[in-house]
Length: 598
Ligand code: ARG
Image (cartoon, rainbow, N blue to C red; front, side, top):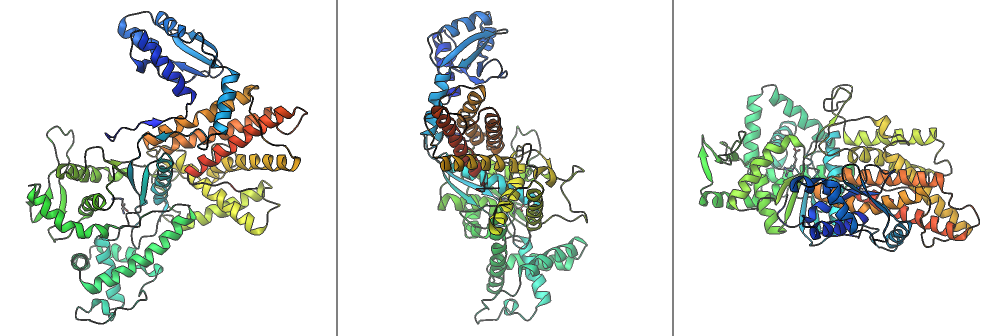
């Protein structure tokens, strides 16, 4: 993790507040403040929060933990935030909040523009390198992960106050470009791009469509794989010539990039994923030559069997870390070369304090090499480059997901399938019947996207999860559609209240389900801090899910618009209003949005 401090301005959530008081109590009794860490209770039936610190410090001091706990508890005796505080078991401290304290907190949250979200104490410049699509390769289900996780991290970090740039880091510069040039030259040899002596203007219209690219690339790659060495060599030569500036190749390549990018922007757009930069590997190209000079001058770049490498292994490495290949024996730059030069480029163009690479964990060895080379060369300080790795999306057999015919499922088709399924689910559940055709289509799309993205975000990014559209699309359980459904229920309560002329007022906590809901709203602060620090949107996803559940339970137990007590109505309506706001903010931070009606 970065050596830059990751301190927060918190929203005075209970966990932080109580930890502060408990920490001070431990200090005044001669212990470390850290012993005062307070967490949500493991036994919500007994307490709201607990502190286990007395056990740890007593052990170290060879003291009786219950006695230590007794000393700490005395510091809370006149604390009017608490209804009860007691020592449980071997020396845990259990805290039960007073209804007053909960009511006050709820009202503070309701009037807080950030709804209880913390902020970073110091703004950092962060690049999130995610998505990582490649020219001419259609996106498949695997690309869903990095896109969805990266998008959410981008939103969370930006909302927390950092200056964040999302970069698609388009794969537009490697050997596959040479392969495509050769493939097009075979099919359309008369195009001017291949004529080295051509001096006119190249056509502005692309000689290949997206479909052409999608057909040519796999077919040509397969021929090489099947042993066509002549083709491979031609592609390598073309790659080198492209990279060294052959004009016709550059012009043709520009078409590949443009055609692909348009399609990718459309596919990402359908998932509500956007990038601030569509920089590609090729944008690092101008930085490669000077970087090579610099690496040589620093004595880091050394010849090795015709190639040039940077040795990155260290004495104390437990495993073998191979050198970074910077210039291949054919004179081409490699994946590692562009990644290293991209670091130099980003320093020059943005100067990030942190760069997060949201990329498949199978590339972790690659990033280890690149990062080490960057640290050796002084292009970054340790901790400024971080791989937020993700696992794979698997089929029912536990291996990376394949379609029935063994192919990969294209992202485009996946989204269409999901929309179809969402449509039939809505019909089955009798939902969306009052909507116009366009409203219904919008709702079905939102449900589909929520199903796909939440399935992704509810798992830790490293977990390999099984793709199961039926389950993801259910309106019950920990799913995206469930979240949207609860949001829509809240919206309909608010509409009804509007019709009845009831308005939200000060929140007074009384019923257990109200307590629970306010405690959940209060926990937003910490859920965000943790997702931020651990680069783990699943912790935010957990929070949003619990909040939706908490609302559902509240609504089952606490009627909102019934009864004669105007203050109760106004209070409960206030609670629904606040819950909806926080839920919608949470959805937005996951890149989801709820429809108005279902
Ligand atoms: N285009 C790469 C791939 O498909 C992913 C790029 C990830 N980002 C990076 N800076 N290397 O594997």
